[in-house]
Length: 144
Image (cartoon, rainbow, N blue to C red):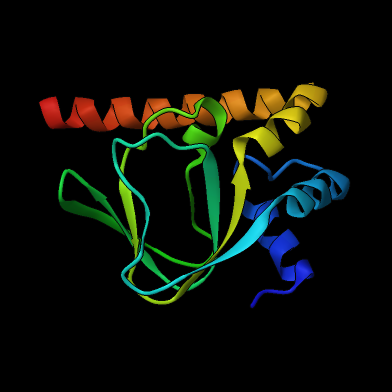
C-alpha cells in the first residue's frame, strides 16, 4: 500500500497534474479513494459510460481495445482521464493482470476543483489536445 507521500508523488507525475501546487495535489488526494482490484478483474470496459480516473499505485494491468491488447501498464500509469471529464464511453478495457491498487477519482468530486482553478482547466485542455494530436498522428501513419 502506497503512503500518502508516495501517492502525492505519483499524482505529481500525471501529466494532467504535474504543474499543480502541493495544496491542489493534496486536495485531489483527499477526494480520491484507494481501490483494491483482484487479478483478472475488469476495471473499466470499452464502450461503457464512465466517470472516473484511475492511477495505478501497485500491480499491473493490460489495456485492450476491440479484443486486442494495446499495452501493459503498471505503477505510475493512469487511465480514465477523458471519462472523468466528459463521462463519455470508455475507449478501452483495462484488466488487472496482478492484484492491483488504484487511486481513483470520480468526476463529480473532481469537477468543482477544476471549475475553481482556471489554470488547471487550461492544463486539462492542453493535455487532451495533445492526446488528440497523438491519435491523429497514429491514424496518419496507418494511412500512409
